Length: 581
Image (tube, rainbow, N blue to C red; front, side, top):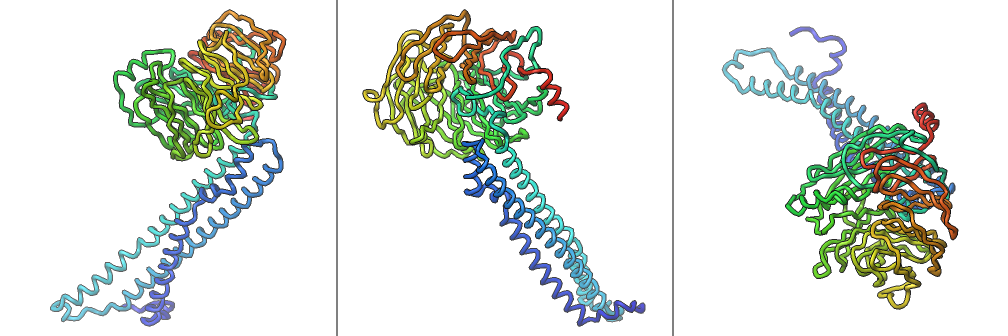
């Protein structure tokens, strides 16, 4: 047997056995401890702690409150420091585990060598001795990959931590997008179509490209309107084969990604007939976004969410649609709930319900059945100061619900026919209107059936069948589909003026400061004065058919045409944006 090196002579049989036992115990403890710690500690849950989410929600409601923003940043910093400290612990633990396993394997190999003996003649006759030696050799060989396996385990845990940390960072970044760079649902951040102050263009021309920052083709048909979060525009398109969510770059118009929603939908002849009805189709509902997820509903009764990279998070099919003109309702966003008003069926057999979904995982937070037939309206969510409410319109009721649990608060019987216009709200009054019925102003302070007690005033002459009214609580503007424009005193119902503009209107009006922006189906936008005196302040031609409602953010207007998506804004702004990128 060859002479052992001097340093190996220190590791005799007894010492080597002790090292094997000690390093094996240490390795086992580290494996169990690191596995438990890695599985127990979830950064995404850390960032989703109730107190952390509470601050985020307060900022969503009060985006200019510097005290809230400062508190959020401090809380966020503390949680990130905790995350990186935990990550360092995992890294140090992983190195210790690797070292202890290396010692364990090397000492085990040394033990195997010490237990070996020179061959004896009897070994040939006694194979059990040879078998024992072979088993020791096999055991030592099998233990050699352990460090690699454990290193992979630690790497996996660290990777999961890193992914979760990135999700937490994205959540924090979403909160910090200024409100002037958000248009997170149909008719704006509150869904009411009114913005107190925002600098936007007031003239453009699609033919001469005046103030057209960019124009880009839309890959798929649809009547949904754009929504915006920061530098991203989200849009949907749909046919019977595919339902898609698209993401465009606000600065350049480039298509960043598109996602085909994967949901098991049962297609039948009724749905095929719906697709042939071009006015509605399957892509009329507008998406919503909270800065982390984009939630979209389609005319196939699919609702789904993707993240900001386009990865589908969840989807649900709510059953076969039952609506003679297709589905047009858009969800609204309130307190991080996606509220969906899905009115279906007939007066004799309604199949309607109001849903509240969790945008993060698709969980149905609550569902409330509704005793109304099919409608094409969408819900709005308001905070009256006394209580928060979800307001809905459908034949024959305007109904209010508690957004926390879906419990009905009150209802008023003020509608009839096919209801498509979305309610308007301002200063304690909700306004509903539909052609061949009436315009009604209802106080939102009641409970139960308030038809006889809380209807402030009504009007039954020129009324809309598609576009929605808009109010600031002082004035109420009401457009009709066939070109009549009306302005009211919101409190009393006094009709200040009624004027006719030649054109058809499907788009809903948006009020920015003291200006009304309203686009007709030929793509011509009228800018009217929002007040008791009728005045056309300007006109702007896009040069393409439009049936959608524009999105407004600082210095830009985004309009979906029949074929193209347009960004209205100065060329200088576009150049500055591209240079910054």
